[in-house]
Image (cartoon, rainbow, N blue to C red; front, side):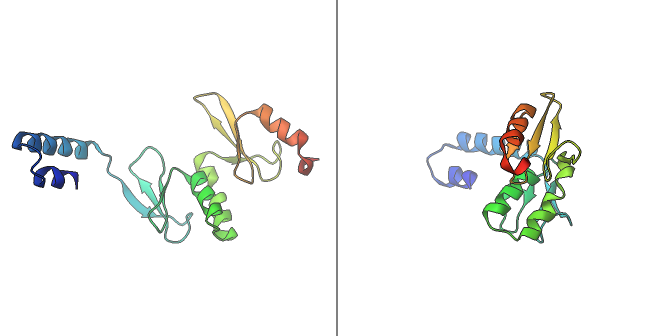
Length: 146
């Protein structure tokens, strides 16, 4: 669209159009090639990216999500069925969110972030707690954990 505007508007000289066209081609070459596949772990009609360092999920309307947690947040806000939400929740281990019933309250998950040498914790309500100390405060003060 931008190339069409630059070419047809008459506001740019031929050298500007040529430079813009060359720049546009270079940018296109450097973009990663993304392919989309169906995945049985996703809600019906959703797709999963491949060809990128991190997973991108795409819903049936074309909205993109940086991972399963973000997709679940969206599903909750958009009132998806509990069974669809729970199905995706059960795949969070694919992104490193691990259940640990021996050390965490029921329904909580943990994920290790090696770059900061810390665990983050995910509540059943999709709240991320970024330190063990904060998790202990929540558990100590929460009526549901006594």
